[in-house]
Image (cartoon, rainbow, N blue to C red; front, side):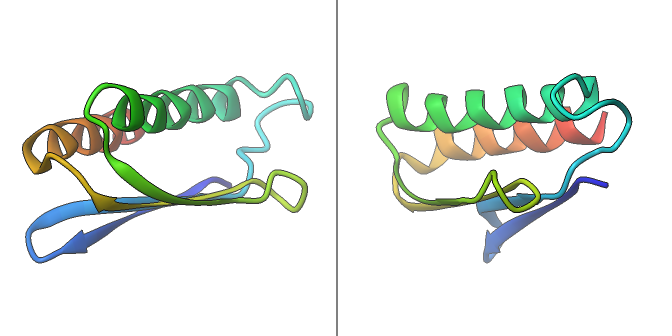
Length: 92
């Protein structure tokens, strides 16, 4: 099971944590894991390249899939839009 949680600073999202694997297919061919990976990697890339957000990133692919992203410094409005989009994508 993939677990997702979002970090908040007051009312604003300032990061997220993803851990685990979906287990809905063979490792390396699991489309649910692939979808979550695509959403999260795209969000990180967009935060860094489109809005120049400074991020603290911790990851551990070898031990069960783990990605922890915290926004350290950024253009807050654009960051909120991208993180809200990730949240929406994961919920749907």
